[in-house]
Length: 112
Image (cartoon, rainbow, N blue to C red; front, side, top):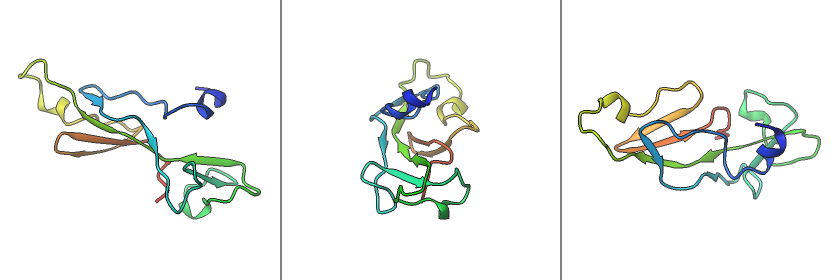
C-alpha cells in the first residue's frame, strides 16, 4: 500500500482473521501522549517509545495506534475445530482474546 493511500485511510491495511468479524470500525487512540488526531512524531522509527512525542518540529516520521473490536463469527458447523475459534496466531499482529472477543493492534504502533 502506498504512502498516499495510507495517509488518507480510515484504518490500517489489515484483513480480519478467519473466524472473526469486525464489530466496530477502526478507531485511532487519542490520549495525553498523542496530538488531537492520535499521532506521535519522531526523527526516525525508533524501537524505544522514549523518542516519540507530540511535537512535530524537526521530526519527519509519525505513527498512530489503531484499534477495533472483533467478535467470533457465527459458527456454520458445530464440529469446527476449537483452534480456529480461538483466533489466529499471526506474527504481524498482537492479539488478545477475552471470552469471544479478539482485539488486534498492529505491531510497533502502540505508544504506551
